[in-house]
Image 1 (cartoon, rainbow, N blue to C red):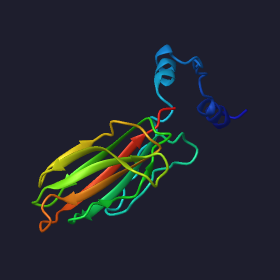
Image 2: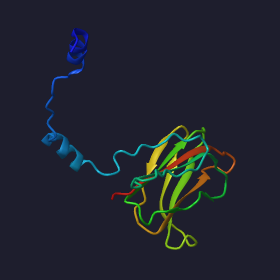
Image 3: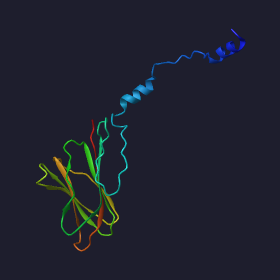
Amino acid sequence: MSRTAKQSKKRTKQPTKYVSRRRSRHSCRAKLLKPPCSRITRPRFKQGASSRTKLPGAIHCFTEHTYVGAETSSSMDSLPAQDTSSLSMYTYGVVNRGKHPAIVQIQISPNAVDYAVDSQEVVAGGQTKALVPLRFLHYTRLAIRSVEPDQPTRLDVYFQAQRMP
């Protein structure tokens, strides 16, 4: 063997590395304690869009519907109903973007036709409130109205819910 061939053979020969294939206890424990939906992240939504978050191949844990710029009037107007039958926890976030107060009702229904008032709040101008139903039925919706008939206001409503596996 020539001298250059011996040198190139020495260069290509790598020392043997021993790698432990056993995982550390800490990393295994951390994976077991983590809920299966913790790796889901919520994508950004365009304003004014009503949307639902679903990621393929993952357990569906988080849902959000956004209603931006809902105008109040002198009559009670309802937002679309949410099927809350399989949700563990859900909340309505209401942001009053106007100067005038608004009356906000959470309404519940067993059949999406007949609704009963669960709770009612007044959201002052510029205020944000989180509203949670007190009772459970299959469907839930939010109804909004101006406190004073001649003073409409604009509300941003966020329905956020999660399902525990």
